Length: 221
Figure (cartoon, rainbow, N blue to C red):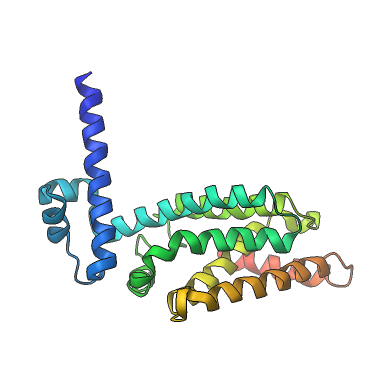
């Protein structure tokens, strides 16, 4: 019983540190929020704060993980009523932007921290593998309910995720009210992707697509 109580208290403390950090990121800015300030605001020791999160980057990685979990839940609900690849892509991408919206204010700092190859926030790096695979899994669900050429089906989820990463980058620098330009981008790019996938069924187009997929595999090897 005592062990369960300790685990519960530990989980509550970890959640408190994360919630406090995210609130401070939004209100004070990423650069001005230090680990010491987070600990003081949360009312826990600095040592405890570092025990759960070794750095601010670890806190943002946890945010990334939570946003993907939220996106996954919202996308699954939306996909249940979405037919056609266009609508399914829109559902997944809009769900992702919805999950990220509260943190738009420090999106630029997030991108700056994620750019170095060794950063745990780099979406293509090893530390973020688990979150990346979960994010790609959302687009696997998108593809499962759509008409997609068999040879492209296994590759398309990652390609859609890469496209979504481009949308997120646009969202970070989108200063329109409520990031409406990003929403318009999603609504505009989704049918274009669906049309491109449709063209991939044509015998004259398939060799070009397969060549592009082979190049993608080669540069990632």
